[in-house]
Image 1 (cartoon, protein in one colour):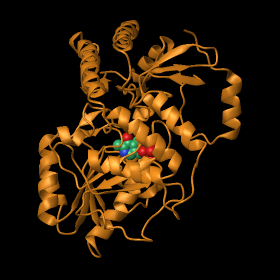
Image 2 (tube, protein in one colour):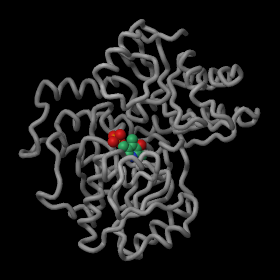
Image 3 (cartoon, helix red, strand yellow):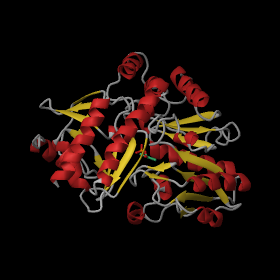
Length: 395
Ligand SMILES: *Cc1c(COP(=O)(O)O)cnc(C)c1O
């Protein structure tokens, strides 16, 4: 498969769109399930799903139908009035996750921002410290960026929110030093996605819960990438035995439409009061109708079993690269996987896969990440592992 991007498309974009993204040289015009198509009709197997944004696959018929119906009825009204789809989605999320109540927003970063405000409101004055994990990712707006434990993303934009401390994902002793009666909240992911699918140590998770209980801080678990059946269960934290006070969702929640959600247990879900926070677009009937349709698809136990089964096949393929000495490490849970190479070849691997008809993503010069739509077929997974082995052999 040759490089297919029309250079005029790249030139038009360069002249009109701010250069914040490094794009792959492919234009996509259509999607169906786990497949994407370029203007020439070439088919790609989507192995990244918009960074776990399209867990239901592209143009899932239930999501399309929900959007069509809602778009022809009522798209948005702001939050000055009652609307049914937001209530229905909040009920669904409450009943299927951690109980309590939901605040809707429009993205993952906004969910982090809202949770930060909720934590400060819950803590009250004088209790303003927040703890997060190094290498974690919680978004790129100022509050969210302050939580994101990646210095290269933070450095150009300092000063940030000043009260955030970052600790190790492997060493619970660092939590002992960081959490105190001044801590309002601990933010963490169960598996750090953006850094290349790095699981957080179980004793860090359990110590965080223990210390939050001891000092009355909120444990806020960012499931924006791990959630909604990406790793098998609806929430990765439940499989890790972790009981959060607050769960953040976004990405795949809208079946492709922008929406984010902060879910809080009954004990903390009234911390934000009228006037404390809001967003004009949040809880739009359109996004919530799409969200409810997507959630119903993603909570299907048959689908979740497939995620575990196909994830094991994918991970096996990655492990065999380690066994043959090509790769250093393979990591994964469900359909959230990554492979790390000893040399900085990840971008070349991604390019090789693209030429072979598979769209993946490198999280660094060394690591390639796979987050396919959860509806991917076994045949596509097996072809991916075969293509990956061939690309690596040709390096
Ligand atoms: C993507 C992501 C975010 C940010 O979501 P946006 O919608 O891009 O703002 C936050 N946390 C995690 C874990 C993510 O993967």
